[in-house]
Image 1: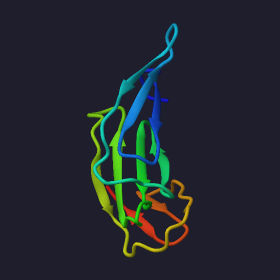
Image 2 (image 1 turned 120 degrees about the vertical axis):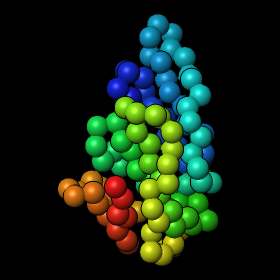
Image 3 (image 1 turned 90 degrees about the vertical axis):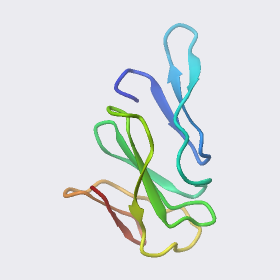
Image 4 (image 1 turned 90 degrees about the horizontal axis):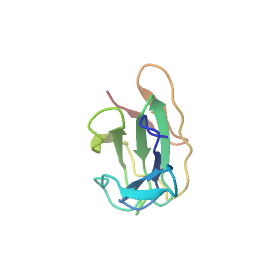
Length: 109
């Protein structure tokens, strides 16, 4: 959920959206991610309103993030040392700015 109470939708495609749950509800177009399809990718909320998306696609060896409390624009967050295999790889938040996935660790600031 975004800080303004809207539901943030992040799927495998580049398009994102917000759902305004007031009254009957309405979908609002969100910011487009920088890279292609992230099917088989992973996402994690690593801080309040901050989401990191890694891997996925053909497969991608990149990572990108969005700050829902700030500009709400996608930025490149770094790259993974190898593209690995095309598979779902869970990731989770750790302290000190790291988010490991099953195969590699992504470092970002």
